[in-house]
Image 1 (tube, helix red, strand yellow):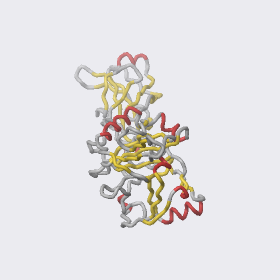
Image 2: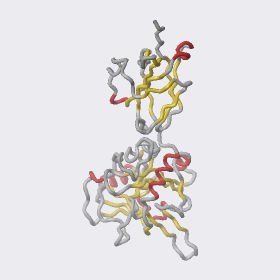
Image 3: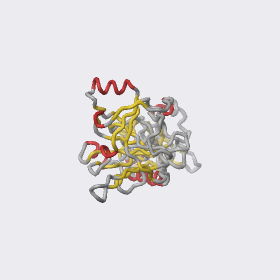
Image 4: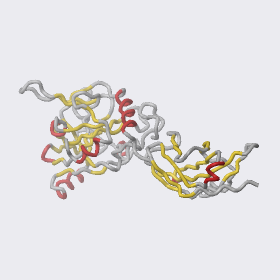
Length: 335
């Protein structure tokens, strides 16, 4: 009778990315020599079935030939960014009749996958480039909110709109979600008027600030996300961070930087002569969400009532989930 395989122990996870990781564990020299296969059971933490291991002879999700440890596990078809997983391993020896002699399951280990890396964001940026459309002139950034918001800013914050933590809307793997603080602005304009739209789902009051206050040579521009919410139109998230600021430091190693004068989304063209004004342009075929990483004082602009109807809050992108089936804005890593 074959000697039973020992139970894998001391499970270790390392080199975790948004769609891969390496796993290793301790095995006896005898098991290392005779093991032909490893069984890896991987599941999302929140949906784990604690009885899944009661049938030891049922193959697990991943069956791999035995290789030197640590073993790489990768694949966007079952791994998503920023997701907690549970993993357990089993060693096995394939028998001549095709059955397996297997060890007991190891202890269950939990880990969390990472954010999109720069290479993944570059893929997303490349896709967004194809959807941006032509550039249109604009002159102001704007931010719609309810009267209560502006009352609070004046009363409690001395008129300063303070940065807030970016929510989880958009691509799940975007490095700024839940980590970067900022104040959101829009800049899209209507085709026929060249002015901001009259309607907004965010509130009936609009703060407007001259474009040059937020977009100028002292500002760094970064690409952060490209997504849709089961709709025909798409959103591009950009970050504006003053050079040398904390926001700039955060973004510099995590997000692709864009050339202020030459990119398909948001541009600043410096005047050629002293009497000329800078030219500001935005992409026409995507909705831009601009995250400015520093506080903005209300005195730098104006607050006015919008003339159109205030739309339902259900039309906002707050914590909105990305459509994982869209071929336009998804890349070949976890959503």
